[in-house]
Length: 496
Ligand code: HEC
Ligand SMILES: [Cu+2]
Image (cartoon, rainbow, N blue to C red; front, side, top):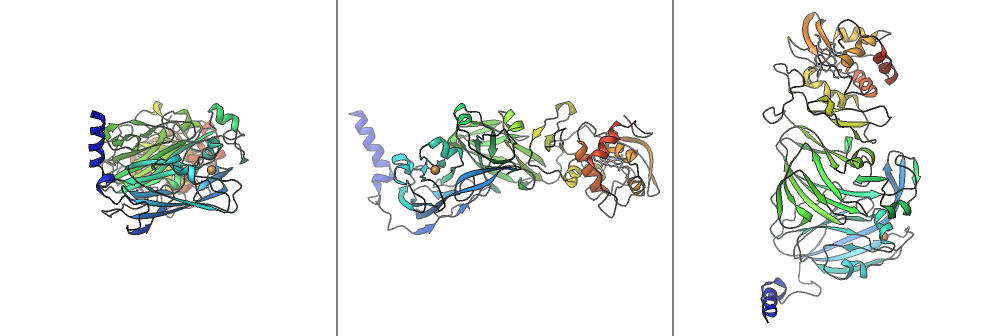
């Protein structure tokens, strides 16, 4: 009795019962086409305050793409890339969903959207042969962030090949506006070849069953969120991450190095937790994360199951530009001259392997964290901005009376045009102190050593950059040249 009564009142209170119009097919609603975006972009906030009939058309395309540098893979995609298109609708909308399967596909596919209330989340009615399409409609009853994926047998294989994405059902009362919304999606890949093995890689059923991923990636490709592809924002701005995990196997201990999540809508649901360091994102689950940006720097997105980050590619970057905020973060590792900016807290770093590595450096050098991000190209400018510009200035102008200029420096010109450039290379390697005359002015400062935090390759790049910028000109430095200089006895003013 009691149950029945409760159920009845619950139903009465719901919009289902209240509006006689729970349309079988929402013919009376305004019609619009959904805006779909590729990661890391998110469709704009929906400003409507009432329901619409939203048409979503998604095409399955099987195609070869980049898994990592020199490593290709035949992805099965929702919309042409991995993860699939981001779909944004509003709570109460009726969605008319069309699933197309490209004529060049080899296999049938379907779609299970976790936002759907109905058989298979749509999978039961969307089995679609190559060259065909299928259609169904559903009403978005529950707000939140949901994963969608293919559920065609063998399901594991369809997911492992990249068939997933996110659908966001914006609540009737939208979340507060932020400056940036980003779409990030983690997933694991299983290839017959080892991690880093070049060429077109085949799916490994054995590794998938054993749950031994070869790659664990953000946005379907190593380097999708690093280097030039990094997410970008400015100090003072706010960020919302819509982050999903497609698995097929791994759960994610999602963490951003150097940030604290102000809010985490756990599992993409209604409530949030505050002040979170690491949040768990289940396979087939999603999470909404919000935080403000208080200081500049490069913040690494990682799965804190950290071997994945270092060895399987689970790394992304959020580059935050803006004024240093010494009241919030300040490093005492290097002397800060008056008028100079506080040194950046992270610096680019790598090791012996040919792979570039990005390392946030905490105050102590011993705590250097190396991150394996093979897709990151080292640029001399980036190394300079991360390590040198805090003192020498972004334009290499130095600081009057304390730090010598690099721009049009006669000292630099002389050393960089010599046949043997060991003396010059050893300045950043081992640091330098004592008197130095640059362009007729005497400086007596102290430059810290970088031998422990910068690789030979990076040193070659940054020296090439400074000796070929701001009016300087010299032969490029090579990794071999730097390596040689490392092994040579330290010269006069270059300290050990
Ligand atoms: C903490 C401040 C600081 C940082 C960081 C720094 N330098 Fe210096 N640099 C100095 C000072 C001070 C001198 C002068 C040293 C002396 O008096 O012997 C100098 C001198 C030099 C010189 C020779 C003088 C000239 O102007 O031509 C070069 C070249 C140079 N630095 C390159 C670099 C490079 C490359 C980096 C980054 C890898 C770097 N410095 C990072 C402070 C810094
Ligand atoms: Cu499929």
